[in-house]
Picture 1 (spheres, rainbow, N blue to C red):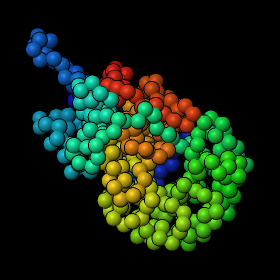
Picture 2: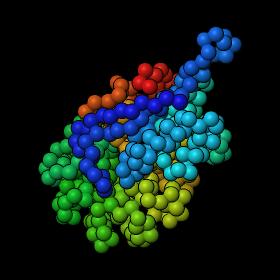
Picture 3: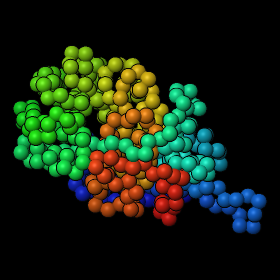
Picture 4: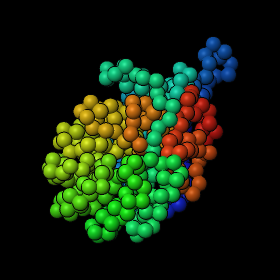
Length: 366
């Protein structure tokens, strides 16, 4: 197991509950690929590459992630034991990095794509479904940032001209009336054929959320994401029962387990971040568990660098008939670790067909 620290600059500062970030910092994780050159009977194990990029409020700190990874690298036990230890330490970003590297290596060893490997693993471990052939491409939403109603509508129109058929409008930074005007302006501009979502990022209290949902009902939204703070799971369940507008939960998955969120009957959709859940395997498990109870899974990133972002595309590709996902995040970085193998074209991203994440495209990084 090999580690390499990295840092990539953000095009726009990312504001979290704790700080304003201007870069994404993390670690690349490498496994396999080494063998004794004199041992011709034992070929080198397939290499694998992972990414661990902790994000405050979602995962452990960077120092805790580094400590966990370095101790894992020194651990003589097998992969299952090391992954279990990372679970016990509650270090999801560290677990994501190692779990992804191991999955990449396993998929490459089997000469199949990461999405096919994940789908087959889920079928055999959970006995949930006969794994279909992974999708060739997945739909993605465009995110429309804060602005006046006019600038918001103009940005939405550009996204539709670029081929997007699903838009997510950021809300919660302005008054309720202003946000309502912004969402209405987008709907009037793009028409009813475009799927429209709004994301409040937990900014509203219960009375504000109820006021807004009542008025958004006529605009035909696919869902409103995180209308209440992450911890307010019971209140969100009550709000969902009272409203006709579907509700998606994102930040709530950092405050509650997937099982608890589903048991609370608080969401019509879950926004699933592989980095925050501890790996692509965990993300696909969560997506399939949600589907079992009629909740739609939407795969997204924590503004990851290219290795983790491409892996998230594979997770989405392994979810049958996945709805538009939040994977068009590469342009939020000023620079990246390697060329992006998954550009957005006409509102979709092609799923690399393997082997692994993208063959040996990332081997030279770590």
